[in-house]
Length: 86
Image 1 (tube, rainbow, N blue to C red):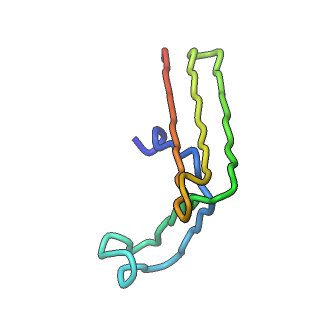
Image 2 (image 1 turned 120 degrees about the horizontal axis):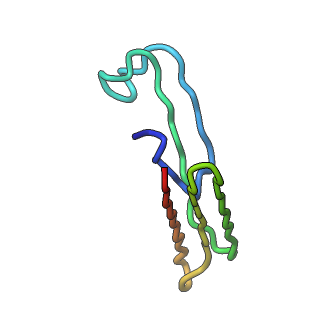
């Protein structure tokens, strides 16, 4: 199921080795993977990507847009779509 975990707005990925139970709970005995998503920005930016796999007719599209919504308020919208025929 981890292969279907798509995020369009990843800012940083950290791989933490060793026991991380103190910080991230008792099930992090062998380490942890920490994924940080982007924070909303006041400057309007965005990104979109699409992939197509011919062998199994898989299609994936992902994107995000961020920008100013009102004075002092910024927002971020992220979406992912996946369809497969395999």
